[in-house]
Image (cartoon, rainbow, N blue to C red; front, side, top):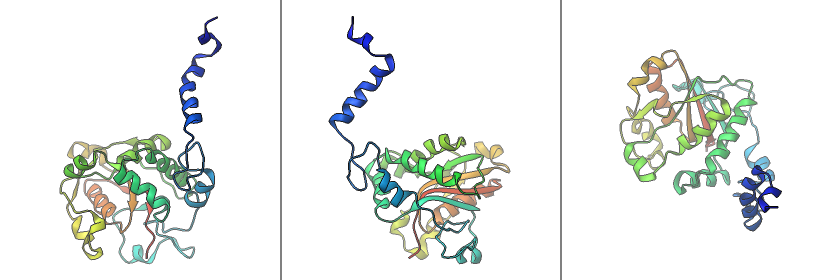
Length: 248
């Protein structure tokens, strides 16, 4: 009897992966402990699955049961709601830095899964009709070789069963990285940086759009993009961000 007949077709397909896993056991990306996933269960529970009260509009942490933070009450942003999977703090920040600057693209599906779980358990979740990743400028895209927001948006769209339109918006002006811009200059740095793709103007009319990004700090990037989408006719804009930088 041929050896192949001892195994089903599916068993043969699984064999190389099982053999590789036994020879090269995986390590948790956070604690370096042995695990078969990117992040082990204890680290997920400790760093990535904690819930806390947040401002409904910008997702900044709140100390009380208020729905909006003082900043959003004083100066409402162009986006209407924000959902996040985690705080941008150690050690989670290292995973996103590795994704953004180290081409660790395997990190993107993890954050898409965590973000999908976060929004689905939130009673305020209102699903967008389209997902739009924050676009990179042409020069930055060539330099990096990929758009980390799009890498998160692809699996997120599948998890949430929402259509993804990668070119719904365009970055028409190269800007300096927000991390290298003084806080008081960040809004001006993004001024007129985005436009909605004219080819999708009819689809944008009265549409609820979800902006997807990896990290939200000051919020100026998603504010500028949301404003551009609303000028083009979007009815509502929700931000879906892997991690939110807590206020200092």
